[in-house]
Length: 355
Ligand code: SAM
Ligand code: SF4
Image 1 (tube, rainbow, N blue to C red):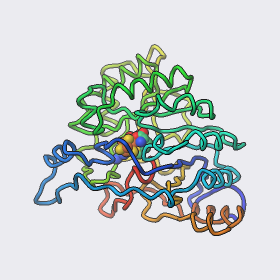
Image 2 (cartoon, rainbow, N blue to C red):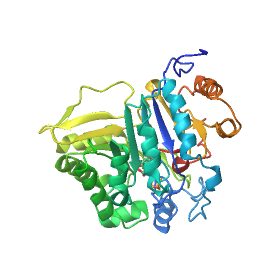
Image 3 (cartoon, rainbow, N blue to C red):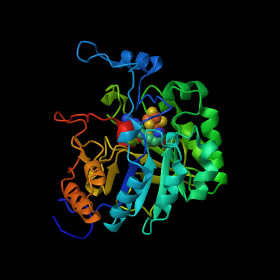
Image 4 (tube, helix red, strand yellow):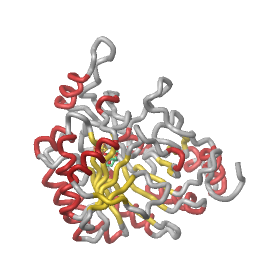
């Protein structure tokens, strides 16, 4: 491990990208993340072989982290300044649903002022975006990703637990008007739920000139209902879309990108496929995560978290925190083990980790 210099791990990967979760709360109940609605329970029940698998947990009475355990904006800003001094260039604010964090624009303004942040983005379900958009843009937000898994109102409600398609579409349109370009949209694909919408979603990307990402369903849901059979492999998604659209590979991709990208022949819009389950990209991973309660995770699938709060609240100086970060990153896992017999799903789920 180097005593100074950038954040490198023991496999030679250098960290450049951090995702900061600002809350574990959410106003949606997505079937792949917080599958805690009756509809989600009914769907998954049909998929489980009860002789082998326990019934999925449903309708969990959720307990959110108390405010006192969440990092303050000042604490997040401090960690980010230290991370930037160690070579981090990209930051994405996420959650839970980040727009539920009161005064989020204040944090965005703090992060935007840090010299060395090349890319400041946010991932949101978009439901509250129209209410906060102008303030976030004025605070310095430059890029945004929305989650949108369905264009059919009833299916949207089934997938997210919320009757909110109209609001999310309005949010996407507003982001385009505000120049948060390129507007990105993510869809998690679940076999038997929204895979019949692949072509329609790609058509939407082309019509609206969006950068659309199809994501494989990962075992990070709160109900532990993930099953391999529900994953639509990236290869299959691509074949389906190629059968409908003329797609050209985007050549300017950098190796650390998680998505393989294609543009439409007429140049409007783009699709990307993120296939962490069937085509892992761990070898190029340069990403860290900071949870809302101050834990560093070196992988989505980490079984260990590293708590920065005792240092942040216990009087440690920046150099001590930087040393701790170097030490944590050195231990970054080589790869995930999804689908292998030794795979263990992390205790905390996507909404708590920050996707
Ligand atoms: N609430 C915001 C949203 O939905 O965009 C931000 C947080 S959400 C956890 C971030 C991203 O994680 C979303 O794009 C969502 O689709 C993705 N995600 C959540 N659970 C997932 C899973 N089990 N597999 C793959 N992606 C998942
Ligand atoms: Fe909430 Fe985002 Fe998870 Fe959906 S994916 S339940 S919007 S945190």
